[in-house]
Image (cartoon, rainbow, N blue to C red):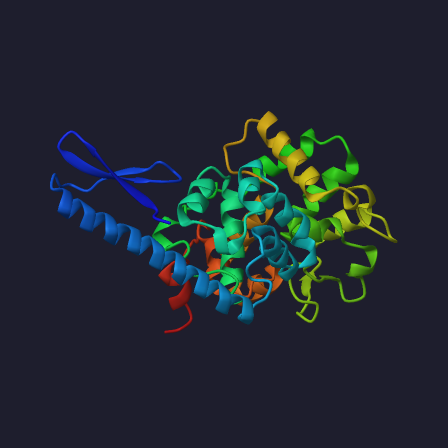
Length: 334
């Protein structure tokens, strides 16, 4: 059955799609030329359809589930490839209303224009994780890497986060009536740990004999070396106030991460802080203070659990470094 039919409007001939009704000009007023163009147009459509049918036959033999696999299956496979602590957060990105229209769509039936149009309506977090899931599907040979060219992916621009200042930290603590939550913020200031690692600290993480606070970052592999922080006078005063047995923050440990971060963000907003201050800002602050104090980078990286110097330097790029005078180096060397 022919896909396009011929009709004439005025002095020009046009082709019309039988199903969609799409019309396109053949740009000629001569019937013989128009019929030749129509024949070529129908032939190209038949060839494309035949080629796709043949490709699907080979594809089924290579991957029996490939013709029925949906984006929902790919998204869940990507979630399972992440650390379990991230599952809830990543699944939440794929439950956005904007992406629901492609979740049930088959991978082999997805058109570039439809997926790109959908992504442009999504939030940044959804765009980010869809791209990671897409790359994961390419590695599994579930998705054609040319489905979305590099230039068509939406540019994900994240909000600017910054370090919390000492003055802001003191205002946060002064405005917090709950002693446990206030101690939690104070520990984040001294430790620079992520909110999850700080909330899950236990009294057993404190080695008073060696005066060390030892813990493993949940983000890293179980066999990765733990963070070992020597306990200074201010940190000791704080730790002595916390429970000597069991969780250091029993109530905060039971809260969900978004509950802790949301509470901190609302406090910052009430106090009128400049934009970019979130609970993760304590990590930026600790790294910037370490860089300003001249702590060797390898120590700061080990404490933060950073395995990449580039990532660590991004955190510390706003640190203010004060260079000692030349006299301090030259004294005693002549």
